[in-house]
Length: 279
Image (cartoon, rainbow, N blue to C red; front, side, top):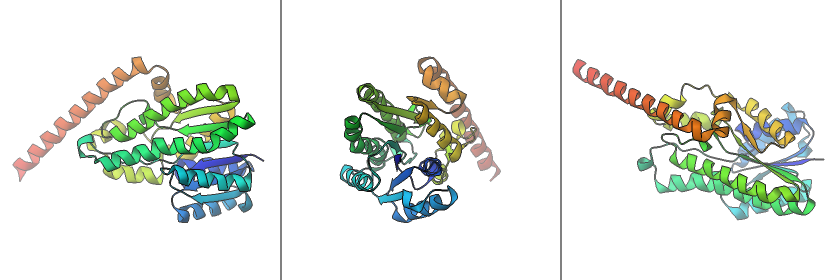
């Protein structure tokens, strides 16, 4: 029976991926920080996805801690057997202009989004190599393909994942281990709603016109990519073109972003002046 380990599996994209594998009858291990959310996710998977409660395991751990992740993965493998598929979905996003983003927030996003993925991969990689099989899917972001105003830390962490995935893929393929990375767009998750509250207006100008994807649709594309052994998984035409033709596409997008932000700033300044004169 396939054993799937998902970090950040208690909600959002990770939970939706877990739902697909639970419905397939796989053994699913969820790793996340909140035990309360994990228990809720376990109960939902055992009912709504048609999975058996005995096939859903939960472990509370902070992916930023290598020791925590290693211990959690070990406990999961002791019960469900070796990890066949790893999906690294744990992540956070804390928008803010660089000069307003303190070093703690910057480091936290790097620790969880990038290092947290490395820790999870390290926990299963040697075993996969020894067995000569295994699949790893790292969840980056559309923000891992182009820099976005107000997301310097988040973009840095997601760009780093792409480089890590590229290098690891080269090392892993000779050992029968498949490495993949995906670049989801804005997705309807609890975290996305929290993100919107602190998103700078300049970022909202260039990102607010794109409708977020349902987490279920993103999860289906991710699982399909794992099934087919794709290295890179994109979502929508824009991200596909950006991923495939970045040197040509990125300057055009940057030009459009800069103009949109400038127009928005001028409009805001004009409206502010009108308001002040009226008062």
